[in-house]
Length: 356
Image (cartoon, helix red, strand yellow):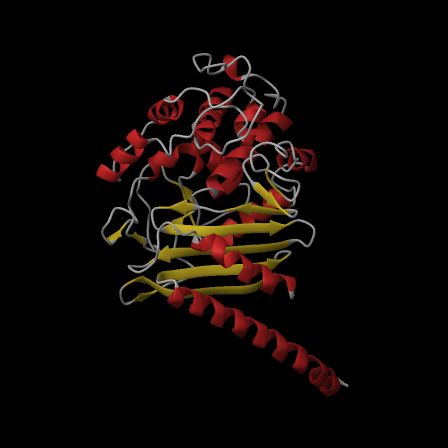
C-alpha cells in the first residue's frame, strides 16, 4: 500500500517541480533580457511557501541571496497606513477627523480629513515631481530631507483641487500622516513601526532606517538615473520620509502584506476601509483598478509597487485565494531606470500563482 501511495504522489511531485523550474527559468530569462543585476522572489499559498528564489548577484562575484536586505520602499507606506487604521480602531482618531487639530498651518486643514490624506484625495501636491526637489536630490542623493522640507516642496504649487473632489497620488500626504501619528501616540514613527508592525509580526530581518544605514547582508542596488552607472545602496531614504524607510527581506515583506490583507494586523472593518472603492470615478480610478488607502487594488488583488534608487518591486496579495506574490529587482548597467521592472514581473508571478 505504501508503495502504491508513493507511485501516486510521484507524478504530482514531478509536475510541481517542473512548474517551479519553469518559473525559475522565466525569472532568470527576464533578468538577463532586462539587464538586471538581481531578482529575489517568492510565492506563498496561505502561510506555505511554494516558491522562493534568488537570481543574479548582490555585488560582482557575490551571488544574490534571500537573506539579503533590500530597501522596501512603499511597503513602509502600507504599514504606516495600517498603523493609522489601528489608531482609529483604538478610538484615538476618526478617519473623518479634519487635520487642523494636528497640522493647523496647512492649507484648508479644516476641510482635509485623515481619510483624504490616506486615499490621496486631499488636494495637496506631490513633492516628488517638484523640479526644485529633483534638482536638489540629483545633486546629492545622500542628503537628509526633513519632513517639513518635503511638505514645503509638495505645497509649492498650491492646492491641486478642492479636498475630496479629485484624486492624485502624492507622497506628501503620507509625510503628514506620519507627523500626525507621532502627535497622537507621543512616539516617533520608527518606534511605532517597530512596536506595531515588526515586533507584532515577529519579523527578524526588517528594520526602519531614519537615514541610509543598513546592516549587511545587503542586496546592493545600482542605477543610471543620474546619467552614470553607480551603486545606490546607501542613497539616503529620508526623501521617502515615513513612507519608505524600511530595509527588509522577501519573507518579511510577504508577512507584512499578508497580515494586512488577511485582516490579522488590522481588523476586518479596517481592511474594509482600506480597500473601499472610495476613489472610483476620481482621476484614473475605475471599479477594477483603484487606489484604496495606502494600497492599490486591481481586480481584488492588493498591490504595492516600490521604486527606490535602483530597487524596484511588486508586492501583491490576493485575499480571495490567500496567495502572496513578491519580487524585488536591482537594476544593472543596461537596465532602463524609467521602466518599472517590478510591475513587469507581476504577470509572471500571477500566472504561476494561478496555477497552484
